[in-house]
Amino acid sequence: MMLEPCPQGYEEYYIAFIDILGFSDLVKRSEEDCELLQKIVMLLNAIKLLETSSTELPEEKPMHYVHSFSDSIIIFTKLDEYLLFWLLYVVGRLCAELLMYEIVTRGSIVKGKLYYDNSILFGRGLIEAYELESKVAKYPRILVSDEVYRCAQKARGLRPLESATYMGEILRRDLDECYHLNYLSLLPVWGPEKEPTVLLIKARAIIIYKLKEYKRASKQTLYEKYVWFANYFNAVTKNYDFAEFDVKLIPKELYCDDV
Image (tube, rainbow, N blue to C red; front, side, top):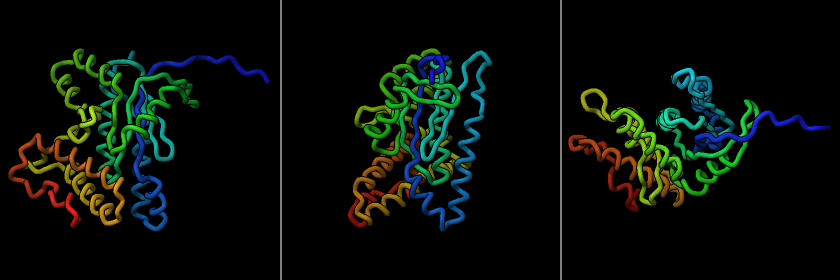
């Protein structure tokens, strides 16, 4: 049997690979929990809507592509500074929205080559994105490769002042010198009457619950992941005046042996 000629070759894209942490455990628990099952269905429907959503960019601009399977989501766009700006935002917003379902994510964004023809997707870029997520990210964060960071900095210079400032704030340098999406700062931090938004309240509750759960179970590796998340949460809230809301901060006691 002769193979059909390949209609196209590899193309370069910005590629986001997102892993839903603990998804297999959620599925197992949903067999006995109807509410959790409904939550998973709502989550997958929300991702499905993302697959058919518009980038709201001029018609001549290339569109984005979204694929989801099992516990992974892949979003990729053609190389374009407007689409990079959009990709960073939509991935960060997705991670923030998933927190509302009490779901934490880990992932990566890289620049690399893919072969894509609507039904087939593979390439070195996807491998690099997966390896950055699985081998380097370690904590519940979305890492960006050095190349994507440089492209983002270049795109920042091409954007209006307000958008350029936003582009600078959306990427945060971690203690290991890696850059990750600062998605907790994507949504307004303050709600009505200077109360923390639902997102931050939810993030705080998840962090506290997981720290206690993994500490009691002596799961040190998982515990350390949420210590990182707690430090990230505190770094974000530190940028705002929390003096009158100090009781809403994560207590220092969570890091002691009595957790």
